Length: 258
Image (cartoon, rainbow, N blue to C red):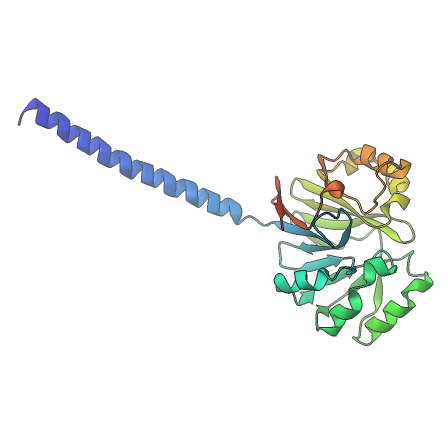
């Protein structure tokens, strides 16, 4: 066999093993990506009445263990029920209401009417004294439900590295904090401008967050500025328009448009 033949044979052999090696590396990387994607994650959706809206009517959380939380039940534009149907959600483990005002509860009656099963309804303990809950309590009574109090000292959800807790409440407003791995998200329900000052009085260092969602439409008032200054969010989602999802994967987050 000539030297030219040997060189050609070596080239073919190198090419063959190069292809095989590249294939194994590709499979390894695909497997690694698959495992990363299978990490437990929290899905947080902001349901809004239109593509240009910044104020959410309701927010939906899917926990890593499959539990579903709905925060607020506003449906003035008829967007909540279609969204739940599209997501094939028929059971809600916890419905969290901060205010009895129609803007935040208008979708509740229809949800109960079409058979969406709600297991528990939670309201800030200091808000239960308000007379506005009478009509809502009547709707819930027909389904065997009652309003249960939210206490700031008790987590609403805690499992492994995921924790959801109420950190401040004032009348018809509530602030919640979600920690999932290294991710943290703070959200306001009702009229958070009322609790902005209250949060600012807390230990700001411990409340520093990656993401902030605030219901208030006024971005220049003092409570809101105090709130943002305290939390120092990496991203303020309060100004994002339209319905979107946030995927929290422990050490990163991803925003998905509708």
